[in-house]
Image (cartoon, rainbow, N blue to C red):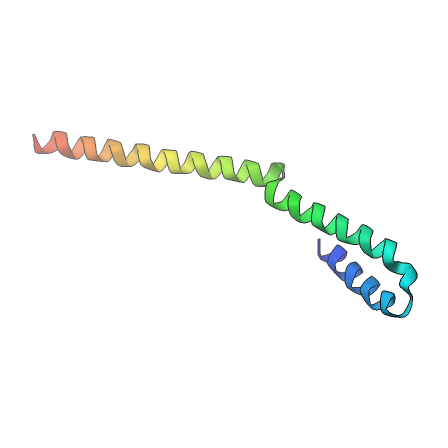
Length: 75
């Protein structure tokens, strides 16, 4: 993504002198936007979210088990 951002900046500078670079600029903008979207909502991001969700469930399950064990110990 850093390469796309750098290229976009370079083309922006070139566009100031040569408006013919507009199409390249628009294309790079679209590619950068797609890359950012994929980073936020792509398969890797979804996999991490699923892993985090499972970890939270495991913590809650452990907490419930500890509460039950404590209650039984006090009885």
